[in-house]
Image (cartoon, rainbow, N blue to C red; front, side):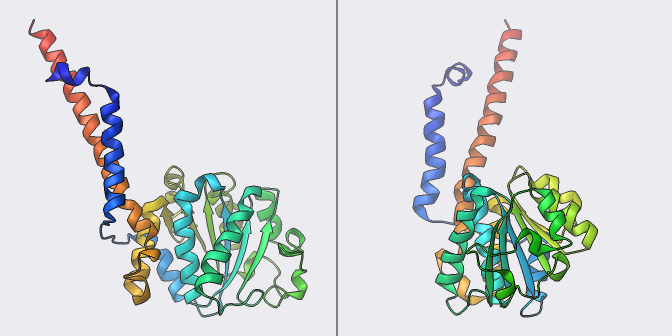
Length: 285
């Protein structure tokens, strides 16, 4: 058996991975998710904010990371829409602009048509400068965003006419894939101005964010797992999200990820088993 496994064609492994991912997707089966504390802390904070609280969303990622970060973005926006918080959207990534438009169109305009632009949400658009933009927003936000993404002066938009700086926000939500992202918002917003910050991050970046909890960060949503937990928290609180699969994108993606990870662990154990079996066989000769 070790000889057979040591010469196994890798294409069988590729086939096994294909089946591990494809079967759960085809079966549309999902595992129950239980929100962990880093996710529940964000959920409870948004849930506890007064109606009309100001929430700044900084979507600092590119389309290449959309598969990992879009579900958590959608879940967080849905929650803010339900609570009728004022939402301000921006990005520090030049290729993040289509993502702003997509979330506004597919979540707010489609699912919450009663919300009005300029009164309930606004698209500030893109700002260059990385952390310099965050620093400048701490003193005078309109120097960085004098107009919204449609070139409308902020002074003429009801929800932005009295906006001055980052201290005006009740919460900042940064969803990022790297630089600039969570670290920069913590250093230049949460630290100097004591503004509550919640983070969404890729699986690679999330471990760098955890040390900032609970002082500089309210909580962290880590990749698809964090998004699935947030969807579960929404479903647990609001009946409308319990049965419709449209509201469980991340939860449905967890099943193929689980089986793929399980297969990888099994292959690692099998590979090590074959290695040690061959070593023992050589010693016996």
